[in-house]
Length: 376
Ligand code: AMP
Image (cartoon, rainbow, N blue to C red; front, top):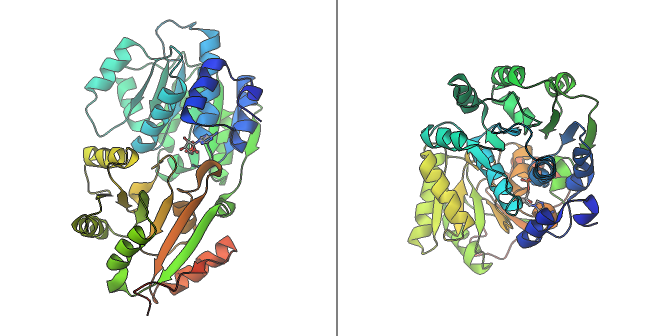
């Protein structure tokens, strides 16, 4: 199956070829034809499955083929729970829409609204937004969403987790009745089902592999080590395995800073990213990591949400998470979209019970690496 088999137009398939994508992922294969057909869609898929392209590609195509009927109005609205995710969705639209003359912009809170308002004034076909800032700009009359043709609610479960339900309801009340709606969620709690019932009209349902099988594609190993030897072990593992791009997970913000500092001292370019850092510092670190001027990015779980790096080869669990699901989410950052990835974990004797939970959840043995200088 190719992207042209999905009836995607040449400007899009050319952009995809430039990105190096050859085969559509399962969610893309299942969702794109229905979205192009104008159907509402309920997609159960998590980050890493290629879901962003699954909605971005057909939206670009539909808007391009229909031309503008609404003059200078926004034609597609994508709501995302976090600024990191909103920015990434924007980057996807830039890449896939490179050969089309459609304008998109991203608005999110925590930064000045001035450039966002300026971009809106120039005219935008596709708006990607977080709920709070969108409502803010709507209340000032800077954004109007009454001509939307396509509406996407991305990571709906996380939106609800983050307490955005009232904001979302306010936004929904301002959307026109006649529109195509796409809802994506990684999990399906009852609140999501009732939200979908109210929002979608005769939706097509598509779903792809649940969390536990996301771990299948990833090569996993564990090093048993004392707490005080984790830092030298990290350096050893990076050098020994010639790792030139890795995301290292740690439990605490201070821990993240200390690990990054230690790596830099040992001559390995590293940055930390966590909630105490300014938005600007986080974006710079992420950009440096994506561009590979930063070799190792050390992150807490919260800060890492929504981090999406093409071809991330290694994830290192500096500490074992207490929740087995967190482990699966972490290692899901590598080995994406059919590529192989490697996950390495450092485990002390106190952390062994967590490791056992993980092995139970993924239902697969994890190789123990015994030949290392800090094995006791
Ligand atoms: P997402 O689930 O949207 O966060 O996408 C996960 C990752 O897979 C992103 O880095 C995409 O750029 C990448 N990706 C999306 N579709 C494809 C594809 N068909 N082939 C290869 N990589 C893809």
